[in-house]
Image 1 (cartoon, one colour):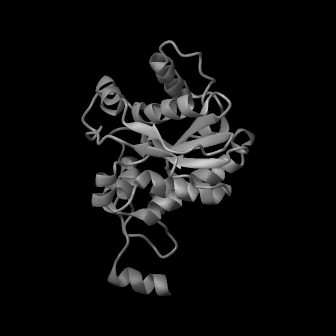
Image 2: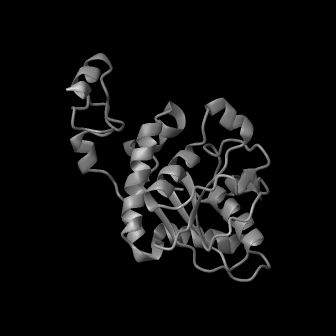
Image 3: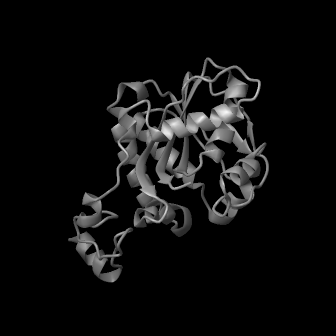
Length: 238
């Protein structure tokens, strides 16, 4: 009854199609919920997102020893023009933290049912530069990482990585420009004393930002620490 009363004053809308939500609907209408483009890649170790990310790391490796195959996962998988892109955009640009937590919790529940995610012992968000975080009021990756950590029952470690250089928005860059934009932008501040870290960002497009973070963590912590990757969505078409 309370939900119905508040909906009269401030009607809630579906994040994807804009339809007015009913009292039993949360963030998506039943039609958009039924068509949610789930990736299901949390069920497998090898899949297109993982292959793309590992190929990127191989390109960046240089003279370093070969990397172990990196686990990756995302909740959603869609083309960059798909209206479901409004889900991560609601968190990033419209301050919809509740929606971000809801979908992060959904991803973590899927992950928790798979044995290869069972030994994750800390979750690390991709950091924002302090000025951008101050202007936005929060780090969207940290919102997601916090809910994933809470659902998996492990610590959130937002103190591990620091963005030491302010970078331009990646949205208008191609893959090579994205790599250059984030090169050298991150530093490791603390050793998490963990064996399996989960690195979290809101969206995986080319993987450049996550790869830059992964590299500095791997170099600082060594091959004995497994570093996996999760994002709310993976965007095809790049």
